[in-house]
Structures are given as structure tokens and as C-alpha cells.
Picture 1 (cartoon, rainbow, N blue to C red):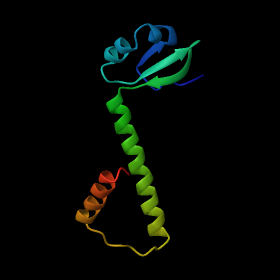
Picture 2 (picture 1 turned 30 degrees about the vertical axis):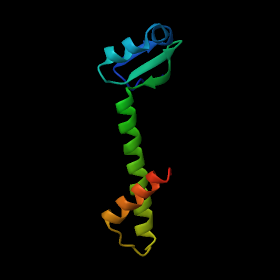
Picture 3 (picture 1 turned 120 degrees about the vertical axis):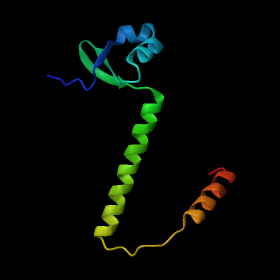
Length: 95
């Protein structure tokens, strides 16, 4: 049996009729999209998706930092001002 990781479900047919109404009816919560009574995917508001992606990125960075610490790599000191200046230069140069 397949788990549904959402309190709200919608059929693909219902979703096709009015996707905006489905999202607004969910009140910001994820919606499981079903096709023939099987979960085919999940629909989330854009801000929730962006938050999820940022958290995944943070987890990747934490894992990388942990691996480097365990490998006894030599730390490199940087200042936030230098990082900000470098990021602004990248943005100015279209990178």
C-alpha cells in the first residue's frame, strides 16, 4: 500500500479543472495528486517549494562541511564583507 504524505488529495482530473483553486483550497499545505488512486506527485505553493530547496541546499552544505572536518582539511578564514563583495561582483558581471 502506498503512503500519502499529505492531508489533502486531489485527482488529476480535478487538478486539471482548476489548479489555482486546489492550491488556494489547501491553505498553503501540500496536496497529493492522484492518478487511478495512486500518488503521482505532490503540489506545493511556490514559497514552500523555495523553502524546501533552500533547506536541502543547507543540508548539502552541512554534509560537505562535516566531510571536510572529518578529512582534517585546513580551514580557510574568510570575511563576510569579502564574500558579499565577491557575490556583488558576480551579479554585476552576470554570473
